[in-house]
Image (cartoon, rainbow, N blue to C red; front, side, top):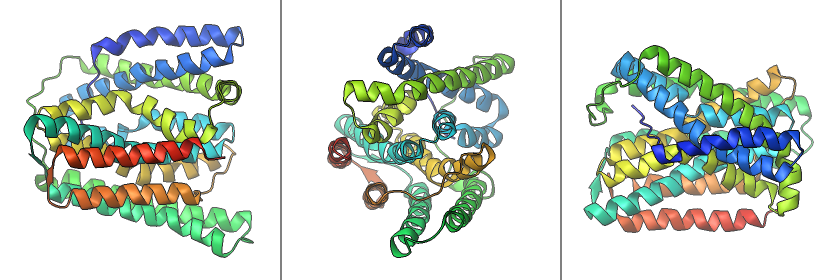
Length: 352
């Protein structure tokens, strides 16, 4: 079961939501952009906390499925807001950014912190292998449409949509199959250590917080997307850098912190489930489902990513697959992952 932690000290960031609303009324786009982005951080954490509380009350099996299903709801809400205004380049960049952020930034920091405190840590190589193979399959799904366009640039819109829809459907089906495999049919092989947690919220309270937080994330996302273009122009930040680096960090900040905390406590299996499991869900479920959501709202989005995006996600997947093969981690491997993320971030800042 994936786990989330929201540090109470960041709850005060919720004050930025009314600040964003007020700034929007006075057309202060830069302030709207910054404050709405900051407001999403604690809201994403509240979604994680409430989901965890509901999951505890549902029990290990149903709770695990709920956590796996709701794991990236914040990213999905932000992505739908971007799709609704037709900013497909930023949507795709944010999806790729979430994947590499979890694989390189989160695992890197977690391995460094955990490795410094515990010299060498162990985790389930079997679970890591399932996630790695799923991610490699997802990368294949990203490559196929891109290769199609490169090899046959005259493919029309209908052809691109058919290929994109087919790839998306296959990935979603295989993701659901992997979910069934790890959470139901072979759950005993992927059991993470019991944290002996007890629910501290009532089921009703958890549901209210979950629904309310999701709705407020939707509001903050609308404000963020609406102010995005003028704000980045004023701040002179490349839009792709915002999608690839900033938005994923904002949406995953609470979860990133949780992964590092569990690594520091020598619970790397949970860290791996948070980071790599999240990347798998984005690649095989969130990204593909957006293809169908875009059709439903009248802004069709294909599944064709840029060569830079495909290469960096392939690189991140291969690095993590190699490092996790032995089921052991140390601070040096963490530093290597973090270094790879910094290289990508620097390159992304200069993409035109």
